[in-house]
Length: 450
Image (cartoon, rainbow, N blue to C red; front, side, top):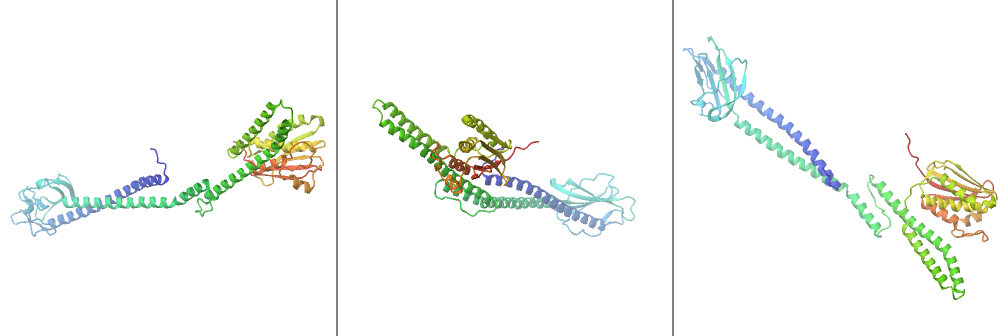
């Protein structure tokens, strides 16, 4: 069975099935009890009529069996009225009520004791319920057989009417229950429909946030959606900022190149054309960076592994200075950051540290005090920065050392990327006196073992 996609329809179908099964069982149980009660009452009436006939039976002077009085409680006088009595003497003589006319009741099986109840076919193929017993009258040498029969037509009609009434009652009750559940589900899902409409409004720009009251069951969902919208908006802003950084870093060298080419000999038009193509290509890739900034996914990265790879590259890059670059810490700890972004952050920080270090750069990977973060610290033994310079270094594009190569964007880019992934960059003084840059990034849970 393939369930429909609508939650309301699913709940209505499931409720309908359970209600049908439950009320069906209840209806059968109630009907069975009621039918047993009706049949028991019918048998009780039949037994009372049998007792009345037995009480009226007597032996005549001639030795036959007579009824001293007409039994009360049923119409035994009208032919084929549905109420009959019959007394069979020991010699086989049969005395019947006027209602039997010229008919007799079917004989009972021999050898029974006490009152016997059975269903038989009576006059005109009428279904009868018969109660019978043996009776030893005073002065008689053998027992007589007394039988009373009543038509089942009235009882069966009552039972059929009772069953129809129960069927209609339980059917109406079931439809009412299913209708109530459907109404409850529709009303209960109304907040989800409002959330969907609010989400559509946010997507189409008609509102900036959800900012709506929601039941406690879906309030966390609304809060998470609001947080997601805020995070996406912040991601867009940071992506634009990053693109601005790159444009700022590349625009000036390109302009200088084009100015230089414009002042060169006239036989360099191809070089100018290539420079223009290079500028168009840079703008194209910057536009793509804006588009794909939100589409990137976080697969997680191991800071120790990334730092080790960068340290190997830095040792080769600064080989003539003989820098000691040490990477220590937990090799299995992971962060919820794209590996390429982590490489860019640590590459900027470690290159900056190697540029200003005298002899040593230390990188450490450890769990932060918060417990849900990983702290990656890059420290050098260079001259370091004053408090004013530290504040200035956090600003985008600021150069503290104009003589050193680079655009001065390394720390700002690292800080932007860290904030993009829910972390931060802290700058301070290292124990050796140099700069200490510490990345605090959200930790990724370690895989479960066993």
